[in-house]
Each structure stands twice: as structure tokens, then as C-alpha cells.
Image 1: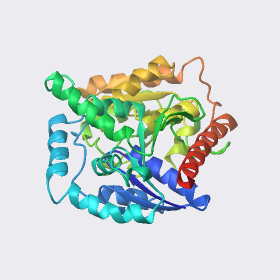
Image 2: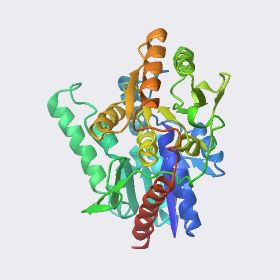
Image 3: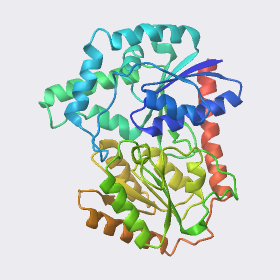
Image 4: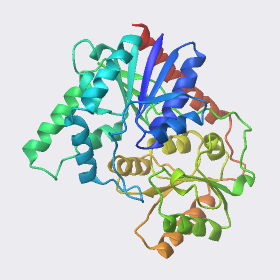
Length: 371
């Protein structure tokens, strides 16, 4: 069986999921062809020992230095990609060869070329869209309140039609039940998490360490300095990872063992992406959510509250002193939580849960590829 996996490189959650699933599929004897959308994404996957080709460098979501989504710039970039004759059309010509050579083509998440190909006869029977439930909602409501209602509804309908026409849709969420639920060609499935074996503790400082991960769009040094200050004030040490902060002392651009560190830490700090929330849920870690103007992550943060996940939300508004104080208060509150104990490390329950989630994904993908 051969599977092509296209993971967009706008953030690292898509790439992390692609490397996790690709290596697990390869262990089951499946040939996986990895494709991404930037040189940075290609290098990120190479850090896990995986080779990926770059489809196109023209398509990307635009962010500022605090990971706030720039809607107008993103709209312009996507429109330029779709309508420029040497961009999406050229990518579709390249992807025809990918379709011929593979049994399935996975689209993680919503690359326009595969949205288009996934609704057309012939190609659509091989396309499987992978997306977070909150991301689809954000995509379909992108123009709500920004354009006349009739145009916003027309756009939403076109996107929905493209998504629904594909062979299958793997819709994941950190809060979905640990099983696959199929309704038509939609399969609801819990977000995959890397299994961390019991007793795996990579944090040198043990229970007093904080696992920090910031997407590469975070590159404001003032935010990083305030974050460090708040953690230090709480008498905690931090393992900090973020490509946008890699030039700062004490920060790494990438850590292939970050999930293990997070699972064995006292506390996680990250933006409310689906992957980070899933790690916090599976390994029962408290988490501080650095909230920005990114629609799907705002929905994720709201879900975290509804589900009772142990968390605090902090927002960077350019005030270093206020942000540092918010980080300190959140660290203090979560690390003295009555439900939290220093010995509460990644145990067999978290490992079993992560393994079960991963097996569900592999079973579904292998089944889809074999039909």
C-alpha cells in the first residue's frame, strides 16, 4: 500500500501529526510519500529522519510576530495562489503523478489544490481530508461579518461542498471519545498523540520543570523575555522550544522528544493548538494557553474550559510586566492545584490512551487504503 501525505507547514501541529502517523504507518509496512509547503517544514520533518518534498512555496497563512492571524494578508495570499496560472494549476499538474502512484492522498489540512481535486471525479476517490473540527469551522466562517452575508454564505457553501465530496474526512478533536465514529464519509476520531512509555522522564529538574512550545510565528523577543520572567518568578525552570525564538539563550529551535518532556513535566505552556491540548489531556498535565487572534485556537481554548481541562489562559497585549505577572499567577495556581502532585508523572494510563488513539488512526487509514 502506498499513501501520499501532504501536511501544510503554516504551523507545526500538521507536521507533527504527519511525522507521527508516517512513521507508524511505515512500521506497518505502508510506503508513505511526505509532501509539505515550505523549506522550513521540510527541514522540520528532516529532524525526525523523514524526507519530504516541497509542493509549492506560494501558499501559506499569514501571521504577525505574536501568532495573530493576518486575515487580509492571508486572503490575498490564498487568492493569488488559486488564481495565478503558475501556482495552483501547476501544483495540480504535479499532483497528478502523486495520485497515479498512491492508493490514498491525505490532505492535512485544507490545501487548496487538494480541496479542488478532492471534489472532482477520478481524483476524489483517493482524497482523504484530515482536519481539526475547530479549523473547519474557522475556514467555513472566514468571511462572516467581513463580507455581505450572501457572499459569506456562498463561500462557506463552496468550501463545504469541496470537503464533503472527498473519499473520506478524518475530523479530529482533542476531546473526541477514544474510538472512531463514522457518519457517511466523515470519521470523527481523537487527535493522535505520541505514546510516552511509563517512567520516561526527560526533564532534568523533574517536577519543577515547565515544557514550553511556541509555534515559529512567535518571534517577538519581548514576549519571550516576559514569559521567562514569569516562570522564573514562580521558582520553576523551563525547557523552551520555538523556531522563532531559536536565537535566544536557553531556547531550542526543535526538540524531537518534546512530547516526552511535556508528559513528564509539571506544567505545559503553549498556544491552544489541538496537539498541545491533546498532550495535556492524555497525560493529565496542567497547561497555560497563550491565546492569540487565531480563530480555531480561540475555539479550542473555549472547549478546554467546557471539558474541565486544568488550564489558565494568558494573552499577550504588548505589556511585558502584565504578561509576566499573568504567567507567574497561572504557574502558581496550576502547580499548587489540589489535584496536582509532583509524583503525578506520565503513567501507563497516558501511554495506553495515546497508543489506543494512534492505533485507531492506523486502522482507519489502512482500511481506507485497502478498499
